[in-house]
Length: 245
Image (tube, rainbow, N blue to C red; front, side, top):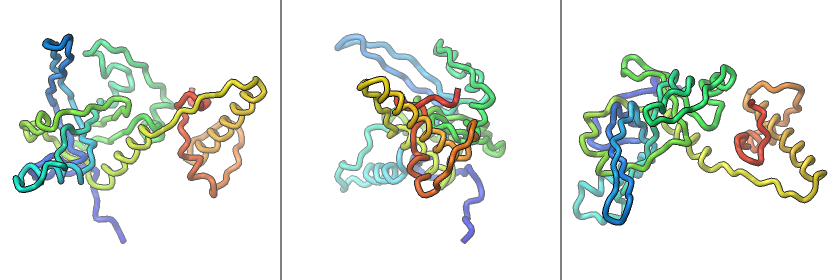
């Protein structure tokens, strides 16, 4: 059966925040306590902000707030969001200059992997002029839990559009996978043992990249029976060999 979903982005008229919503120029006061009674606040403006919280949780939260007879066990205290960086600024490493943070410039090979969503740290969203949404990149290392009440205050003034179903689920799955990766330490038993571990890791990493369609130097045998397991290996953790440099 052919899918009825024919676009990456949509607009909705819901009276609540939904998973995949995109906000533009969202202002957020970040408070840092300096003592028990005082603190400092910095007003941050996110050019683009995407909602990552699960839609079932957002729906239950909204229903509980509108129905006074319900208990409050489904209230959300905060909503998970992720900034969307302009793709060219992220590639040049200038997307966080206003916070005086210098980020690395991304070379062509790595950038092609990011655009094809083959780098687990980033998620690329191709823009749509109809919705005034430019090409955006999410960095899964950068995410916020913003107070539910703060995000709901005038959220319609910031609303730009939403990521359509399936596309938002794909984003959610990639985000969850990135956060659940595990970096295993190398146990220093002896030099021979360590070399064996590194060789095994090297082989598994090349195998996984081949299964995902990423070209690697040399010949790597493929085994589709084990491909799914190996394709889930993380290649950015301490235990893994860096083959992407």
